[in-house]
Length: 303
Length: 272
Image 1 (cartoon, each protein chain N blue to C red):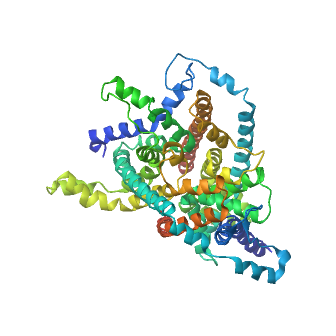
Image 2 (image 1 turned 90 degrees about the vertical axis):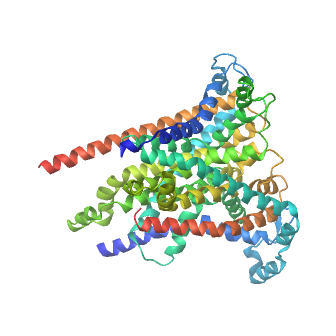
Image 3 (image 1 turned 90 degrees about the horizontal axis):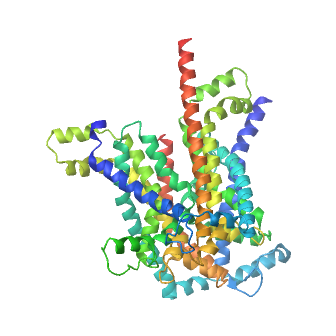
């Protein structure tokens, strides 16, 4: 009896979250794919064909015949979309690199800090992450706009004569992404740097290795797992970012998350926005699987 | 090791934390600005906080958000803990690879994709959008964060304790609730808090999955931000920041106390 209950119990522990994710994570992607092959229609829902059980098998077959890859050929013919994909990838890559350059010294400083101070420093990195993304992006509008605090400060100190235009440019997007995603970079870096054996560096220096060479030959390679994890955690969501390009980038900048949003909410073209989402997913599927495998490996090793 | 904390390290930490905190500090300061022009200081005032409480739309949105966050965090914690148990305890079952993929993928999935796909699901099954759909959407992505937090705790958990309880005749359910759960509780609580704030903060997924009558606070803030920076928004943001900060710091202190208590208990047990 007890054994039976245990067997049922362990099944439930697996089955309940499994089913939830199947229904609310995997199935939706199949629906997105199907709708990306549909045609826009003035109806609710605004696409055709809609599959219903009332049509039976023959209805289903009829529906399948109506599906077409038109949305995809349309997307690939229109330079607007291709440019949006490319500029999203470029912006995400550049900002990931800047985040790494900004985050590495911070993580390194944390890892070398006195042991008693480290939990406080970790807490200080995590705390901004808990405060709303939207609020943190909003905070930068007041700083970056022409009559904003940064320009006031620079004009006051006499560094510049006329206000800089930063808001509504790509620079503002870089600042927004680096700022918002910095904790995602610092924490994995800190986790690997903290575990590193610093006597290796001391040994290298005792043997006459200059500090910078010691860094490149020892610290950097040993922190590679943290670098990969941090870069994935920044790059993947940044490619599809919506809030930052919308609030800081203005109407000039092109990013695919914003394009999808506009396609959906302004143009109400559900099939095209589905096709945009599917292509975005295809672009990201390699980095996502890479990230997932790295995560699973790290966890199985108990790191 | 302490001697190696160089000046370079300290300077990079100071600059790094200044970068992280300065924008938030400025936002809070300017919420107390008398002037409607957010970036020109005109004296201290709490008038924007007062005017908030007569803004019925904002208060309604805050109430919706609080309920969605509470329900979704609670369900996500249960599901996420189950998922973490499944991943750490059962190394072999059919479809485990797919399962772990579905747990880790939402962590990095762009929000526009998650939001769009869930909306299309709700439309496909003709489910009216509103409070329930936002809650389901939030459960789905935040349970994965809970699973990751709880899983990392379970991996360092000493299973012999649980086995001892089973050997002494406890049922697995009883062993879980009386032995395992109390030990992993800090991680479960941290997971709940994370799920709660994720739900509190989410704009993109809520915008897709919400319907009439279920406008959340971030949606409300976003629609006002698009019209420009106003001190009222600074005031709302300051209140949200205060709530989250107090919550996180309290949790950290409680955790620290528990840890100290546990170490003391262990030492006392050794002395016996």
